[in-house]
Length: 195
Image 1: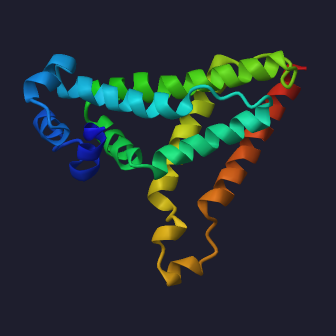
Image 2: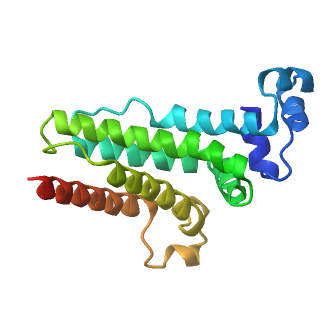
């Protein structure tokens, strides 16, 4: 998607529909017919990123579903969409419209995915009942936050220098496993509390 490429290269502040049109080999008018504003185009980018990766997770068990969700979350950050999403998140603090776009197209999609996972886990009797709305909200925020923080603070093995590889800092795979265990403990605590 041309819009993701432009966001990756120039960031949200310099992102223009004219550059997206140029990159896509389309006219600016055709871009504006489909997306009447920079904000609408940004919403399409955020929606595309979230919908492409977070839908249809059902491995048959809660642990498998959470493992797949974490794998997909990391795939978003590692793919070409990662820098684009980081750029959008960075500017959202100063732009109420962009904040709404990200709320609706990233947070809500993540939250809905968690709601679906926990409902299926409850129907399979892995949880005594569904997880309440506040707990799902906090889990969604945590998943988004850890993805963003890892993309900024944890260097992938591919991009590390030899000196960086010798540090004792865990890699993304180890962190993903720890995140999975923490989520499973949280779900175990929720299930125990509801008994």
